Length: 372
Ligand code: TRP
Image (cartoon, rainbow, N blue to C red):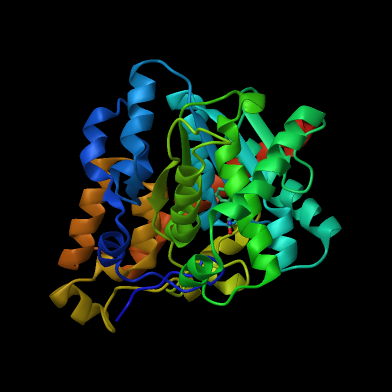
């Protein structure tokens, strides 16, 4: 069976290794030893793959600045799945010293999903940007923009939309169809603007960066492949100094299994969820790798690999390697019961949400600085 990934779909990815092989994504783990402070998501393999990320590490080593560029589709509530991208962006800004280009894909969202620009912008600011700020994003070295209005500076705006327009010549209908399946004018426009999103930090009007890295969910890889091809075909009009690099993270599983998705409230924990309701949500819905009865659980042990509460602890809420190992072993041996495991997560989540929501209130005062 041929593996396909659909950037506008919501399917869960089952086999990351097979997918990586098929599309030529390199494993991330061998790079860890080159990093002084890899993020927890990297150490734990949630960020599992990359293209050309070594080039970014080379830049860091040479103390050259690089650009981190990524985009968000403003759809619905900001949840734990979105949080892992936000954390990577902030890590690039605060720890690795990258310059952040963060775009709201409002044109893409308008063309592909929701047709209300006004509502899209509101969601982008109130759901996404506020949460980013509360998680630690700073206005310094951060260029936050909407695809529909790149810049007030005419030279910058012209450069951005010129690139989006000219990118179209560097691909063909057949190539696009092979990557995206059925093609529509809406898809073509979204893809060309996205190519400009990814490549424009290399233009002189935007800093002329040598390297750009794009952290994304693996569902966005088709865009990366096409954008890299487009970049490599610009040998006259634009001589891009390098092809954009990328890193790929796994999806955070939904509460009931499957992908965490903003279209299904029972699949996610939103960062604005009432901490008081978390206990019930986890107890009732979090998919468990425990056994039917306590006796059976004690005898056979649980299956942490499929247990959603364990996975949330592993990927986001228990950074201490010794403690997470202990939880894994105790659950697997049966000495830790499902209810007890869930309780560990509930306490972590409640305190994270309380703290985060306090920060979110304060973040409102900072919005202006990002929306200049
Ligand atoms: N297509 C991305 C999504 O569906 C959003 C996006 C727009 C993006 N421009 C980008 C992602 C540039 C990475 C880089 O979420």
